[in-house]
Length: 499
Image (cartoon, rainbow, N blue to C red; front, side, top):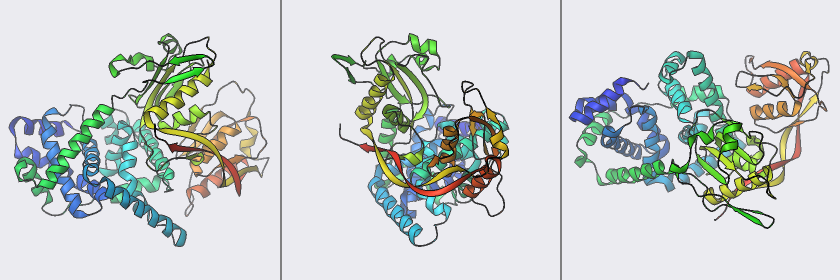
């Protein structure tokens, strides 16, 4: 947990070059750093060298650490930067070999243990989380903190901490699904608790402390790692200020609109408020994509279809919106292997009274913006997939009697690893949420057009899988059965192109 003790030790080392202070920090975090390095390096020798480099970087950065730095999270991220500096090519090759092995073993024998399957992807998955979600997961599962302690660190109550951990686990589950690793959130949390941190080799802490304190003792290869990692860290920090909007053109009949080029200093933070009034008063011809500044997701049109603002959405969301695709479910998306998992804020404001006004223009700008800045385009493609057909088996089920007549009341859905509830859910939204939970396309074949008030709880019976639990509860409460089938499904295929 990030405490004043961590900060005090950093400051004491920075001010007095206290070897004892630095040694305390090394002792506290050596196992976490070594374990993360071993996951990414693949060999103990390289993991030890990465660990040495990370603590050398900590020693160099100690005096400039911001008081709000969550040290454990900083160290885990720095392991990734350091590993990338030297072993990027080898790590990708190893990843491909591991994935190929897992695919063949899954096809030929029983699935590999959960940790073996998720370990090569864990650090990338953690990096895809927002800072508060990542902090909650690291505290809960790597440092084995209680929910009350997690909440205290995040300055929230225990219930809010529990919800944040639950949401973060669900995001990790979705990340793994996109990489072909299907696990429940309970398995992911349990595997991290049991295996994510292992003891570093005897004597490594002392060696790390000595090398970091007297950096002239470090080997050439270690100092090369340090130099490369610092370059990547500097570039990443600069990239965090990225504002996209340079030279994006939008043709509308005979009119061409040039979206304004913006520097980070030109962006007014208030433009990103989820307020129709603020959005309506923002300047026209803006197109901004930036790494998110927000902890929660949200979006709004403000009653003006030619303007949109979104907070903390993944890049694939922009592609789905830009193509006007019907689903953002991971089961309907085909993403490149190295597709970025970062979240972004989006702002697009087009002028009114144009030939290409409204959402069509906004979607076109979104597509052009993502292509010019990230090199990704998307197209629709129909593919045969294993699916579930959602059909009515018991029309007298208790949940089917709770219909809602007012379609304008709004759809508010709460979906989590614990259950699914709504006071006014249409069938298309229910099918989409069930699809996300089952990680299999769910096609609505009920023929129902009304809305329902539901409250489903995924209470597992002994020996049940998550899929079995969901199928049983939905059948008992709503009278729907999931019929396995093989059907053509429209997919959104994302590809990287040269700009």
